[in-house]
Length: 387
Image 1 (cartoon, rainbow, N blue to C red):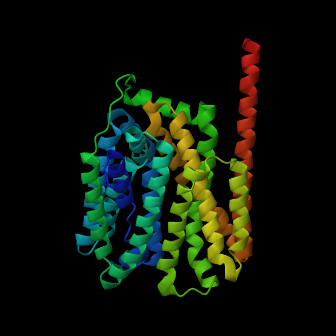
Image 2 (tube, rainbow, N blue to C red):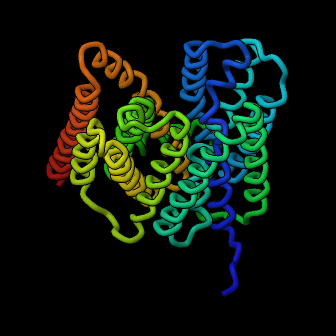
Image 3 (cartoon, rainbow, N blue to C red):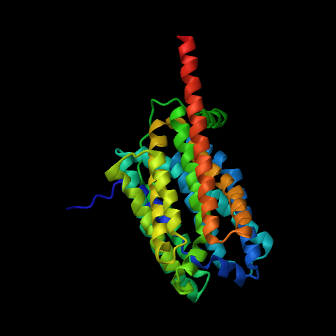
């Protein structure tokens, strides 16, 4: 059977190459090699997150106005340059480091949101194509973690060169893809698109619920990765195998996203309940890794389901803006959530911290459900009054 390298496959492969983050296992060692302490390294990474938050929505709007393909292509070129600078610059001082961080933050946000919108533009079966894309990114991310740890042991700069090369390949694939133009859609300027994106995110009932639910779960996953080292130590996994264990978990996460193609839409409350119950396995030494696999798996399935719903229901003129708004919420929610974890850690053991984390997520999810029900009720009342 002949393999057809379609435009969909080009976009999927480009996104998978973008997920090749060879530098993740050795990033702290990289900072240390330039004279930065661990605390300073985390401070720098935290500031980068703030820069990404500031750029996230505006760049999503730019993608909707000027084209998702153009936005993603520019993002890949920026990331190619940024990662190359990380690896090629000699001794990096604080000013130079923040300059490269800002450049990479711009590249990340130019891609964020517009990548999924671009896949939707070329896809004829978005549900299946997104599921395949999620599985592919899982394999590439996991593989890059393993390879990154190996080449990083030789030189901490090598993972950045490898990542830069993958982003360049992603750029070539993206620019070679043919993206159909929808001539029937009325074009909007930047201000109109920004307003439409906010309106769709907050006022569109079909968008509001999956967007905010997936934001909370995305925040949970983002914060959960910071306890991986504790989980691995608790399970008796040697430090040398931390990268491999992380890669396996991420791989299972990607495969779980792909299962949506087979099993379809499921009630959010069931997925969330199963995910949170899985956290009870994490503190158990014999079942720690299994617990993480289930947590990441159910959460990934939920996010895939929400992403498909958002892309199917949203006004196409603000598709990247809405997805970028969700990504912005994930980063905004992550900071106070980590603060809750740090407070819990002062008085509770590892088991207690996980319970606090899960309880906090459940509380926020229930709050979103109540708000959504209240809004839907008011909307029906308003319609009855009009009629």
